[in-house]
Amino acid sequence: MAEQLWSSQRHRTAISRVGLSAPARQAVVDLQLEPGTQVLDYGCGRGGDVRALQNLGLDVSGWDPVHHPKGELKPAETVLLTYVLNVIEDPAERRQTVLDAWNNTKSALVVSARLRWERNQIKGTEYGDGILTSRNTFQHLFAASELRDYVQEATGVRCLSAAPGIVYAFKSDEARLSYLARQITPEAGWLASQDIASAIAAVVDHLEQRGRLPNLEEMPQPVISLLGHLRTGELKRLTQESANPLKVEEGAKRTTLDTLLFLAVELFHGRGPASSLPLSVQLDIRAFFSSYAEACKRADRLLFKLRDDAYVRRAMNGSTAGKFTATAFYVHRRALYRVPTLLCLYEQCASIAAGRPGKWSVVKLRHQGRGVSWLDYPEFDTDPHPRLAASYAVDLETLRSSFTSYADSTNRPLLHRKHEFLAGDDPDAPKYRRLTEAEVRAGLYENPHVIGTEAGWERELTRCGRALRGHRLVRRPDST
Ligand SMILES: C[S@@+](CC[C@H](N)C(=O)[O-])C[C@H]1O[C@@H](n2cnc3c(N)ncnc32)[C@H](O)[C@@H]1O
Image (cartoon, rainbow, N blue to C red; front, side, top):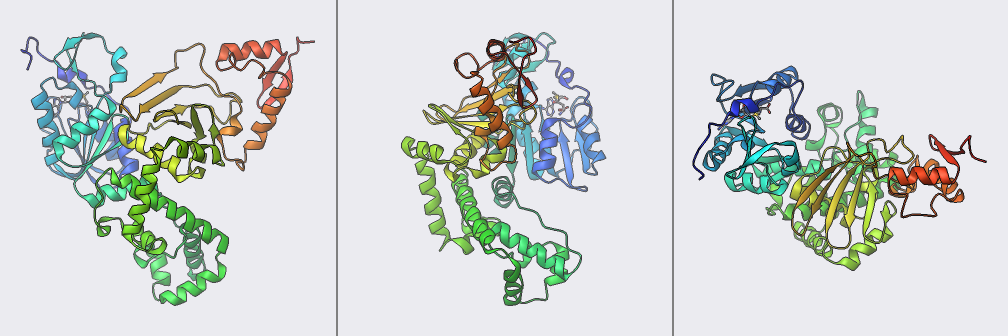
């Protein structure tokens, strides 16, 4: 280790927070932290997250060697280790800190750290494996996949990247797999039921969404108390009378593909026996496959196809949603579930490697090489030509990730032909298509190489004597 020539002012790294930090917010949502859940904020700094989580009704304690040395340090279901590792200059202590936090974890450890793309925000000189800042603090900036590997190695369990710079480590495989299942095949939710008729309607809805009847253990309590006395055959008859068979068939198809997607992704995490899977996935497998082994074999085949360029391109070209170009496939977030399962798997693989960012509206999947970028167009719905705010890209061959912000750019990239990123039956697609057709008629797409950024697009609008009013193209008042 480098000789210690300075005294790290670690306490200076703790900022006063208003509201939840991004990692704590992510954990509340992803881990379904409910009032009463025990949380330990390990290295809590000035305690902003402790207070904000207490306000949400969680049972939170915080400890920090500098700011809260007398804080309560006791094992909790969920432990947060938020932006602590990056301030520790001694690699042995850094690793020990993960272990200490892990030893206090009963169910899930949430580790977050600053990432390399923030390098230009930090002034300082190289020191050890990080930077000694002008404020005499230390920062080791992690690569996105480095953080996951690091926590994985220290805890000895498979970890998941929840978002760039946020990693989850679970104490049990069950907890990890049910988190994964929630991410990949989100539950449709249950309709409210006050009486027998509405409880049956809720089961019918489940049948149509999932393609199969729910088991008793999958039903919410009000449905169980209203329908629990019925025999399976009776429930089947009652619900099949009112379920729409086409919807049930669609639901079954969707669940089959979701199950394949789940099993393919699970391969990265070491597939266990069928009994280790969340109950709903076990039931899906029983309903739609001849056996767990057959389902796994089909999922493996799907993963294998991801390596096949021609196959991937065919899937992109044949997708009913999204835009296929010479180098990549682009699709809007709300149409991602409509693209072939192989492409969903492609996106999932990248999110496992480096975490999917919280803010994005369009995802780009390369078909030359393998790489995914999540693109953030905050005004996608309201701006006829949305401007790119940020892009987070992961190269799946090198596992390197990069983040580009356009916040300070005066000439941002922008989108055209918005409808192409959506599914054809998206309610907004006709409006966007009409605009594109008007723009083509006005000659605005005659010079495709210049219209990709704000300045070029403005010049073309001026050249063609046009302006935009919302999603309508109008003549400029000064044009002849
Ligand atoms: C950047 S601050 C983050 C504070 C808080 N988690 C937050 O996000 O607001 C880093 C904190 O790590 C604490 N810290 C430093 N070394 C630590 C260690 N070995 N174990 C636990 N906490 C440590 C520091 O005292 C400091 O409060």
